[in-house]
Amino acid sequence: MAYFSNKLAFITGGSSGIGLATASLLASQGCNLVLFARGEKMLAEACKAVQARMDKTSQSVNAVSMDVADNNDVQQKIKTAVERFGTPDILINSAGVGSGNYFENISYEQFDRSMKINVYGTRNTISAILPYMKQKGGGHVVNISSMAGLIGMFGYSLYCTTKYALVGFSECLRSELKRFNIKVTLVCPPEVKTPFLEEEAKTLPPEGRAVKNLAGLLKPEQAARAIVRGIKRKKFLVVPGLAAKFLFFQHRVSNGFFTRMPSDLIVRFAAWRSKKR
Ligand SMILES: NC(=O)c1ccc[n+]([C@@H]2O[C@H](COP(=O)([O-])OP(=O)(O)OC[C@H]3O[C@@H](n4cnc5c(N)ncnc54)[C@H](OP(=O)(O)O)[C@@H]3O)[C@@H](O)[C@H]2O)c1
Image (cartoon, rainbow, N blue to C red; front, side, top):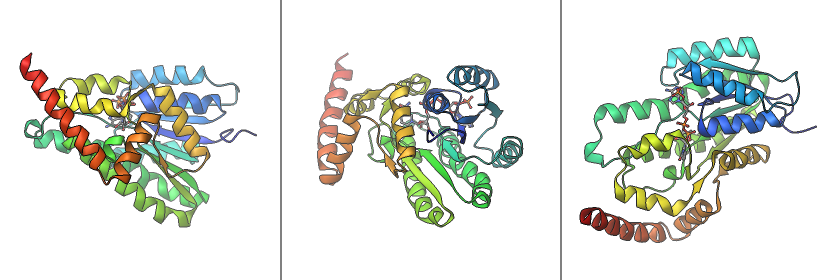
């Protein structure tokens, strides 16, 4: 029997981008799904798209409107979702927001908002689901961080802070949740072509844009394949894409030298070019 057949996955940020592509791929492999996000219209459209990938009539996809940054909302909605659909075998935390800007242009309020969604949002859903997974005797938690959680980049002081936090959080949880038979997978994708990029591009400095090209660009389906493979293999760290894997390897073996040095050169060149325009 296929690995995901009859399993149940809860996916935050399941209405768009990486979360939606992962939901669709899991659906095609027999998984039942509950998608969480704030916008109800996009959730309804996502459910239709995911449903179309399901083979068996017994499979189901449902949607719950929830704001991951609001802990009371999360505790309440997860409780209701577990009562209605059952305890998930897999929780994928994909809800997140991105932004790129010079640090001096980022307000306290913007910093606070991203931390609340990207970091606290992940914390909130895990904390709400943990008692149920413990009671069930196991599960799998998947946190979507980013290459920006492994390598610091120009223009990403806010986003990197949130994604580095998820790396540390996931490392600790991996170790702690093992005793409950709950696996943890940390996913660090490079740039992925989703609506997220359009939002980010509004304020991303040219130097940040140029440095980001080093890690490559993936389609959401490619990121989803790497995520689903990583879950099946129970891997801790998943870095989708060859260019990103290579960059991360270089970063680690050179203790950052082979990423900082080219990145500083690229930043100088991009700044010079943008002044000339
Ligand atoms: N795209 C990339 O280049 C890239 C690269 C590396 C990592 N990532 C990470 O991958 C994850 C998914 O990104 P994506 O590219 O798929 O972005 P996306 O297409 O913009 O999707 C983001 C999803 O998160 C949901 N969301 C945002 N804020 C939320 C909140 N407060 N509560 C509940 N749901 C919320 C959105 O729905 P609503 O707005 O309706 O709530 C949407 O479903 C993020 O964590 C991102 O940091 C993205």
